[in-house]
Each structure stands twice: as structure tokens, then as C-alpha cells.
Amino acid sequence: MVSNGVVLVTGASGGQQGKTGRYVTEMLRARGIPVRAFVRRLDERSDHLRALGAEVVVGDLLDVQSVERAVQGVSSVYFAYPVEAGLLDATAIMAVAARKAGVSRLIDMVMLVSSPDAPSPRMRQNYVSEQIFEQAGVGAAHIRATVFYENVRALVRSSLATQGKILLPWGPDSTVIPLVAGEDVARVAVGALTSPVVPPGSSYPVIGEVLSLRDMVATFGRVLGREVRYQEIPDDSWRDGALARGLNQHAVEHLSQLWRALRTTPVRFEVTDTIETLGGRRPKSFEAFVREEKSTFAAQAA
Image 1 (cartoon, rainbow, N blue to C red):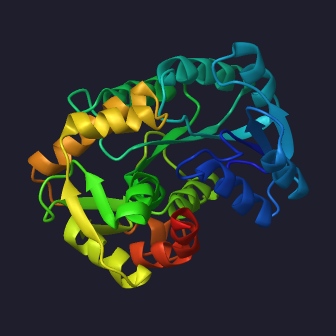
Image 2 (spheres, rainbow, N blue to C red):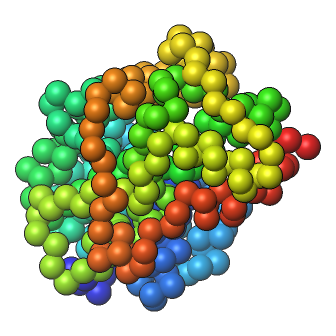
């Protein structure tokens, strides 16, 4: 690790998707590493972090003063910003605060594809965010995550429970999706935070499994013990439904363009060895995740 100092973990309570900040906090504390858990509010989730021995601080990544207070005295930062508006503002605030505080390693969680010509606005913002952190001289390195298993769960559980269908604009059932467990992304982040040497600017792509939509449907059917069907729906129908369910506009725009890219741009994805080499264990399979979440689907259907 960079030093024996405190690690600031943002998003430590865990959001609606991969909950990587929560996993990172738990894994670091299991190793006895001091953690300052940055949360938006105090609730039962922050109580859990405090029970693990983490120092809990309340703040907002878009508020300069709260971020500056949070980074005082820490040696490393895990930065994960939710898929919503404000990424570049939050990046600039954290970069300035971390540089001022003398942070020597910052690990951020970004999209698998991050470039000026990436297919979605969020991916293009990730590219700029990475440049800001690297220019700040805070030892930035990047965990490049793909579609979380948890994202798939959120996308399909309602229609799967009520209709036995997966309703998505993913094109034919031969469409290939790169996937990963949020827990595995966190495991790689912890490896990067604790490794003796992580060259600034390093990138760690994280893909745990590559499945066709046909394979995913078969997995659901096998685990749930019932027929599961896939029905392609138009982009506009998916977008309207996602907004009606409360998904924010930024996330809807990102996902809409991601789905379009996955179904129209042939790309060969491969499982990366990052989870095993840096995270310390083999990737969790999609089927293992669905089996773990079987009760969630059953509860949804009840």
C-alpha cells in the first residue's frame, strides 16, 4: 500500500447498483486497514460501516468544503461517482482537494470504454475525468468496469417476475454482453489500493463473464425453474419505462446509447485476468449471482 494511512472511500453506503464503495469498505476493514467512509446521509447502512470500525463522515461530492474536510489526513482515495449528472464537477473538486491534502493514490471506477469518441456522453465524461485526476498528480489509476450483474437484476426482475419475460432493446438474442459482479470490481479496487506499486495512469479492465443474451435467458430459466423468454422492445419504449420507474435522465441517456452500441457494433469481448491477479480470486459467474439472488426474484413475484 502507499502508506499505512487512512483510505477515503466514496459511495461507501452503497447505491442501487454495484455497491462497490460498500464492498471496498468491508474488504479493507477485514484487512484491518483504516477507512474513512464518505456517505450522503446517516442511516442503517452507515451504522453498518461504523460497526465495522470505519470512520463515517457525511458529505456531498459536489460540495467543496465537505470534500476538503473528508480528504484531510488520508493517504488514498477510492472514487466512485454514481451514473447521474455532476461527474466532472465532482472530479474537479476531488482532484483539487486530494492534491492539496497530499493524497498519493486515487483509484477511480470508470466505464470499460472511455474515450473522446465513446458511444455515450457518460463514457466521454469518464475520459475527461480520468485526465483531470492524472493531471492533478494524485497517483490516479482506473478500474474499468462493464455492465454489473446488479444492473441486469434491476433491469429485468419486474418483468421477469410478472410476465416471465425479459423486455430490453438489446437486439437479437445473439447479442453479446460483457458482465461483472460489483463485488469483483471492488475486489480489484482493493487490490489496487493496497498493492505496493501502482503506476499512475494504470488501467485495469474488469470483465467477469461474457454471455449472449440467449445464454442469460437460459441461466434465468435454469435457476428459477420456469420458462423465461426474451422480447426485444424499441428504444423509446425502454426509455419511457425507465424514466417512469425513476431512473434519472443522465443514466437513461447513457444506457440507451450503450444498448445501441452493444447490438450494432460487433466487438469481441474477453474475460480479463484482472479479478484473479489483482483481486485474488476467480470471477463470480452470472449463474452464481442469479442463484444468490433467487430469493429476490421470488420476493418480487410474491
